[in-house]
Amino acid sequence: MLNKINRIFSKNLYLIYLFTLIFWIGFLPLFQVTGIVDLLEFIISNLIILCAFYFFYQSNKKFQSYIFIPIVTIFRYMDYFLVDNLIINQLDRLALFLLFFLITVHLVGKLFKHKNVDRDVIIISITTYIMIALMASILCWFTYILYPGSYNTIINEYGPILDFTYYSIVTMSTLGYGDILPLLPQSKSLAIVITLVGQFYMAILVAFLIGKFLNQKK
Image 1: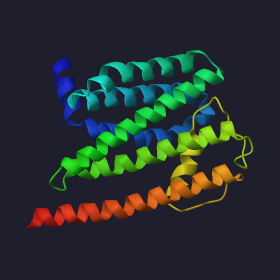
Image 2 (image 1 turned 60 degrees about the vertical axis):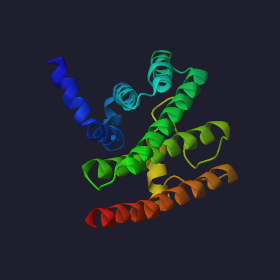
Image 3 (image 1 turned 90 degrees about the horizontal axis):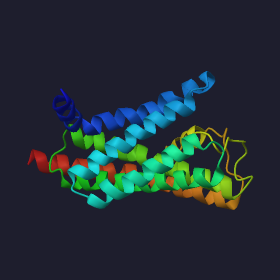
Image 4 (image 1 turned 30 degrees about the vertical axis):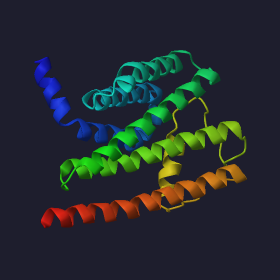
């Protein structure tokens, strides 16, 4: 039974990871009124860490699998159980940022290795875009902590980064609703970088996929 579950999980790893991210950024905010949003984020983040372990394990990346992943997991548990400890909270967010960066590098490498445009390529392309948004949200959170008054809103510095995830996605897609605004030069510069990265990624991705598809047709 466990072997069967492991095969299913391994075969659909990227799809499971994508749905986990979509639930985190799309549906987790709906639970804010229930009071269990912190628990749900903790569970989802641990599922993300589990998927990351599979990513690195399948690629035979021993440092990421056996050293870095346990460190990230320890900080996750410490941040969840040691409530309102800003130092642990910052170390946890930093570890998550580095984890997201390593996952993004892994996903980009997978994109270049695929010769044809198939289901995995589409899933990985979407997942990479979301990963960039999550890294941007953590950078916005650090900016908010290091430079008080960076944004025109008050956010729970110990809670989930849902507001900054929303802000980073809106900024990357150039929607710019204006409900969360950067006020200081540091946050404005970061907003410009997020916008440029989002637009460059979409332009490069479209050209990349079209090129692969044309080669595949030939």
